[in-house]
Amino acid sequence: MLELLKPVRSDSLKEICVARLEELILSGAVKVGEKLAPERDLAQQLGVSRPIVHEALVDLAAKGLVSIVPRVGTVVSDYTREGSLALLTSLINYRHGALDAKMLEGLLRMRMLFETENARQAAANRTLEQMEAFYRIAFEESEADFENLEQLTRIDFEFHLLVAMATGNLLYPMMLNSFKPVYTNISRLFFSDPAVVAPVFLFHRQLISTLSDRDEEQAAMVMYNLLKHGEIWAKTNLSSQGGPR
Image (tube, rainbow, N blue to C red):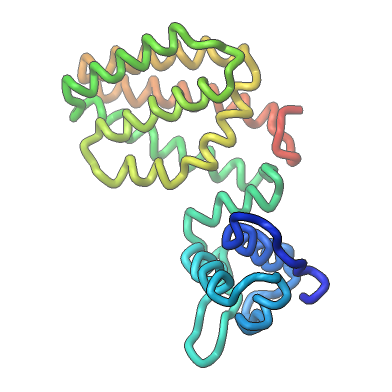
């Protein structure tokens, strides 16, 4: 552990400590059930204060990577059993954006189940104000620069978030927001291919039409077709290195 932990020099000390400790755990250098060094020792190895190390460990505990046990210390947890959604971003960051086949398949399956139901519920519960917001997004899409990845990624996430909000279920947009870092990471790769943009925006317009008509089954079908379009692209173009082939 002493060789793996190097002194931290950064304005974001806690975040850097979190990243270093995550790397220590995710790399397998410290196994499930093993104890980390005491906070005092970790602080010395990382070159930061003990309170910063404690804050970093609290963050890791919230993600399900460690358990802080009184009078015992900090123990590495089995994140496959105890990990939270927040850990997903850490796993992808640890792999430098890479998605292995199993993780990619899991993400695509989860999104398909979640967002098709969102579309169905949005058709039943959307408000006039939300429809006006959908039309504003459609207009922004019509004016978008297809080479501006940040703009395309932002618009796309706002569209899907609005669908979640239109369900009337307060938890759905919260769930989507908790998934945002991973969602936008994949979307940015997706929109790096200009050929996908026009079909996506067409699906968006079709979905807006079904929401306006309050056609629940057709809304779910359009969302399914939209996500299937993205799934086919992802499975074809995303390698284990996390980027387009």
